[in-house]
Image: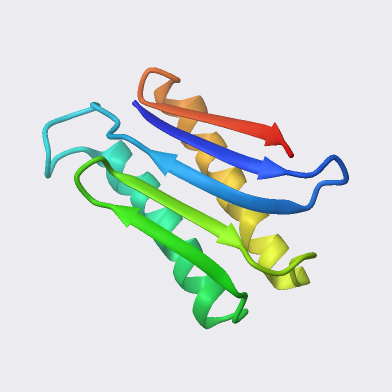
Length: 110
């Protein structure tokens, strides 16, 4: 299962997110759930870096399937906040369609 945790303040400001694990939906190379999650997460990180130029720290552990992204400036720019809203929407839809057995999205207050 891929566990995605998005950390937000009580006022709704994004602080960081972590995507961890493999979905187990299908064999490697045929796992459409893993591919969808990866595309959303990687595209969001790339967009934060290249489009909004948001200062972030990204750590990747390929073997475990872990990507963490920490926002170095608060509050986020409006465009960065929209990108994170979009990521959360997409991941939530994947969770709803394929179930928490493969994708679990949680929000934690920090």
